[in-house]
Length: 114
Length: 117
Image (tube, rainbow over all chains, first blue to last red; front, side, top):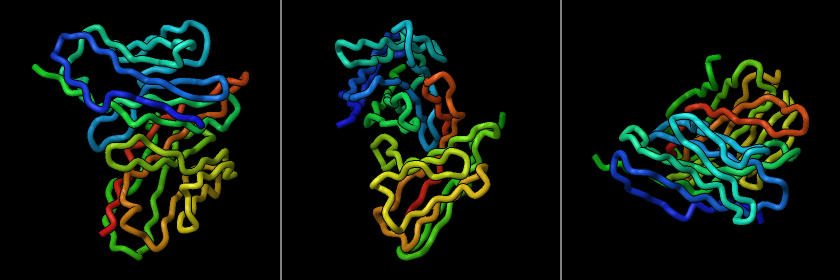
């Protein structure tokens, strides 16, 4: 079955500390991978995406993610977290020629301590 | 580029009533998606359109749900005889058909939060 797992429901980091949010997927086809961020009561904003090529992708707001096929992972990282990064983060997977439907993980809520 | 817009942003209704939501995609996008998101969960796919054709529907989309995109522009999602379990955020996204066999990038609207009393 196709699925996305975000093992950490809630993470708290101190402002200025580094961040890594985990994402593992199970997908039969060649996956395309996305990270979205959602602030309370808002829609989803695209942070970054991986389609092919370089497995380390850069996104907005200083985020990056690395695709590791052998581990079926697409973890999101940021070297120094800002208080404004506090939000819910969703990993999603889609596939080529399957209509673009996305399967989302449960999300990881990020809190930032001053 | 004004982004994806949804109306209304909030809707409170009584059980058994019908509700309709509207989504206006980014103007040049020919694909439009509906997702549902309940509290503490990620969005779940409901259905999608390419132009005016509805190409896929999730099993989550019961007979009480219907979606249309009559002219390939805006879309409506109607829920008939609402139930308390329908309370959720309904998200719309749009994208353009990818070329070269790649996939598309979906851009989301702010959502419509439905509360069924």
